[in-house]
Amino acid sequence: MLSDSNARLAAARGLTSPRGRREAGRFLAEGAQAVREALARPGTVLELFATAAAARQHAELIEGAPVSVISDRAAAALSETVHPQGLVAVCARLDVGLADALARRPRLVAILVEANDPGNAGTILRTADAAGADAVLFTGDSVDPYNGKAVRAAAGSLFHLDLVTGVSPAAALVACRDAGLRTIATTGAASLDLDELTDRGGLAGPTAWVFGNEARGLPADVVAAAELAVRVPLHGRAESLNLAAAAAVCLYASARANRFPAPS
Image 1: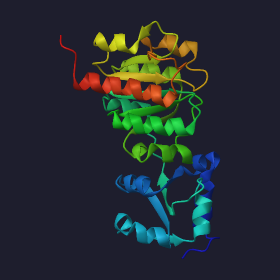
Image 2: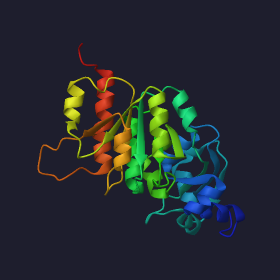
Image 3: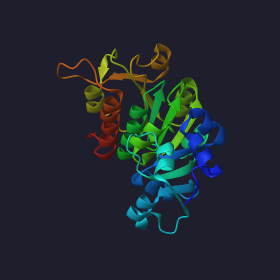
Image 4: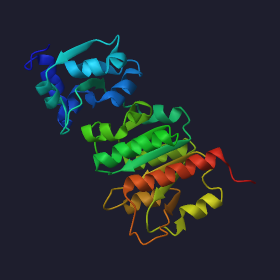
């Protein structure tokens, strides 16, 4: 068993901070689901830690992987949850360049602009993956997608998508448009609603959805730079939808439009 003061453990503990993740180019993935998906992506897992109990419980999952056994106390120091799962992978950052992501000719992309809630960010990653999206772009001052809460909320999906960080919203919109994607900004102030756009067959082609900050929405210049502005219709009395819920509605509308194109 590794000592709690082991240098490798100390380095891993540093990845619980944004600065530590940024400087090391690494992040932590905790729990069986995240570790399973990380191990399935070659070259991603750099180190694997497990308590003795977790190693026994997940023996089949980690079979053949070099695992360092650690104490419950050390596992708690690597976790940002109340109930640590005892299985943690140190992973290489997954970022790809914007040009590289778009060179793969994606048909469905999510662009986050100044989204600042890690739970929402991780949920959108998971939803984008489920809807068949190819990439998620974190632009402007958006939350760190490698934040522990975001990684947990993504439930392994961040290992399935192209993940782009460190670009401006303007650059992302121009690049997506140049790559043949229709850029659609989501805003409650739009005159066109999602149902109308869907009925017109407006979602059948490659699309980049643009989602804004949880409280402030999208800046006016980003809305103006997108090809279309669309609102999610509210048929009941709710004032608005949570960002992740709105993203799910839009991404799945695109997924359905591409699976079942409207008759010509």
